[in-house]
Image (cartoon, rainbow, N blue to C red; front, side, top):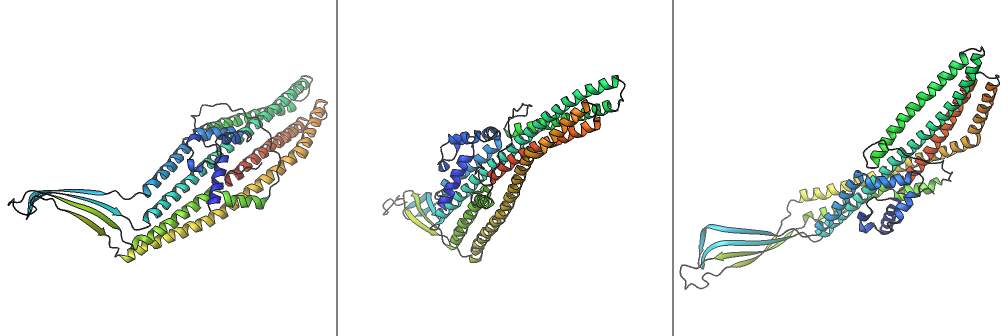
Amino acid sequence: MKLTVYFQKKVYRFCLSLATLSTIPPIYSQVPESSVPEALLQKDIAGRYILEALQNNPGILSQEKRYQAARASITTARALPNPRVQITHFVESIQTRTGPQRQGIQLQQPFPAMGTLGRRTDIARTHAEALWHAYAIQQFKLMEKVVEAVFDLAYIEKSIEITLKNIDLLQRLESIAEDRVKSGASLTDLLRIQVEIERHFDRVSKQETQRDSTGYTLESLLGKDPTGRPFTLDWEAPQPIEIETKQWISFLREHSPEVAMLRSIESSQEARERLAKLANRPEWSVGLNYLRTGDALNSATSGSGDDPWAIMVGVSLPIWGKANNAISIAAALEKDAVSAQILNQERVLIGNGMSWIAKLEDSQKRIQRFQTKLIPLVRQVQEITESSYQSGNASALDIIDSDRALLQQETEYWRAAADAWIARWKLATLSGGLWLN
């Protein structure tokens, strides 16, 4: 168990660019901090934006503070209850043989049942560990959102670039059509080309709106006020990788932060169950009682004016057995509930993993298909059709059809490339940050 947790912590430390590097919990500090940003900066175009987001996003800082608060509670859990001091002042003094009692001071220190403090410490420690995993989950979710925004933005930029190139082509053909009209040809081809050009401009307008919207989303994820900041994204389709499904499913099971968090919660519930079993044990207290006494009426009385004091020992009486047993039963049921939740989460995780592996494989196949067959063939058709139109052997409809086909294939190619990158990052975050190199 310790080795698993140790490796889990190393994985988190390596894969996350925990923005506030100086505040990463010392107990999770086995990996040099300098390797964290370097590892992210080398991860395609998304890495540097992930690093920026983890450094500036306030949601990450919020989760970190919760974790730090939980760590601080460990010290509280292992401490004894605070002692009690009670001071009594007699408005009407109680006359005793040795004199009137004027004030009383009582000091008392409770002691929980044997083993209580250790089990409370276990609860606090495992709760803090669960919040550590929740902290990692929050970071991974932010990473996923940043990656999706970055590659959606990158795809939109490519799509705009492709559409503008097609507009340039159509505008060249428009000039040819205008010359033909001047020579007495029909307006039909010219009008069709002009309609297609306007359709392309409308497409660019929509894409620019999508680009701006996605850019605003990305800026907010980076922890900044949306300003319309331009993003320069120079990227290519990823190189295909071989995917060993069994290996990745094993990684998902062993290193998923969601499952790790639930296992920490399960350990916390086990500690609560052990603590609940102590409900039938008595708790003790030790105290001191001191009474301030005045002089006796007869000063010759033996012990006149002496202040009496006494040592007290108290014990609680756990006589309500059914109520105490109910505490233990409730804790055991909570533990069973978390165990079932872990099993369910593992199955959901495997399902998600298989789904993303399938998406990655499909995207890689599509990239290969577009690169080697579809785009070269469609581009060849488009070039032949353009040449035929210039020589008068093809109509405007032919050139428009070939132009649309090339536009569709090229944009789908870049969509597949973006989907492949997103799938790789998604698998990386599902498996606790293990990279698909």
